[in-house]
Image (cartoon, rainbow, N blue to C red; front, side, top):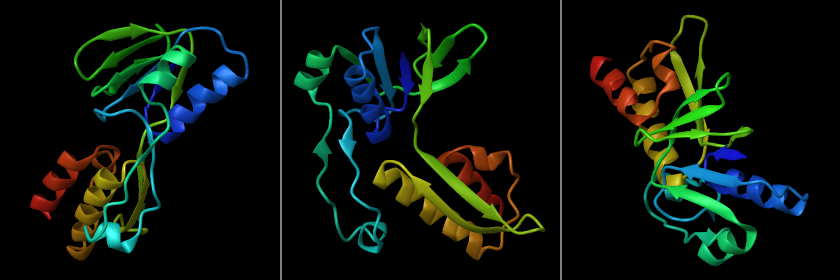
Amino acid sequence: MLIAGAGEAGARAAIALREAGWNGRITLVGDEAHPPYERPPLSKAVMQDAADPGPTTILGPQRLRELDITLLAGRSARRIDRTAHRVQLSDGVVLDYARCCAAAAALWFHLDGQGRLLSATGVGPIGKVAREIRLAERLIAARAHPDPDALSSSEHRLKAMLRAA
């Protein structure tokens, strides 16, 4: 089982698989450099950089060994080929898998009938989501009409849209 997204959802999925009796290989792939941890709720204080709640590790090195879970930290899944059962990682490595679960961070953008960005919500690493939502708020203030395909990306495309707005 390859789990794309080594945050809280991915870690909990890996633990649940082991607890349910899955005895095959489990690989967690995540772009953060540290082991999976619980994300505290996103609050106004966090959005304004006034608070930095400390993380609670879910799967540290010892627990990963106990559960026989491989963590590939600092890399993300860039391309999933469901037909070939392969995932290409951000560093170019290609992994084969029998089954794959997507458990990555996500942002949702809400557009009006004319395609104007109205709001953005997200789940995932607090710092990343907060940065991207702040960028989206600037797009909203600029009354931007972003290309819907560009909204499927993350921070670098949001910045490009902001420059164009």
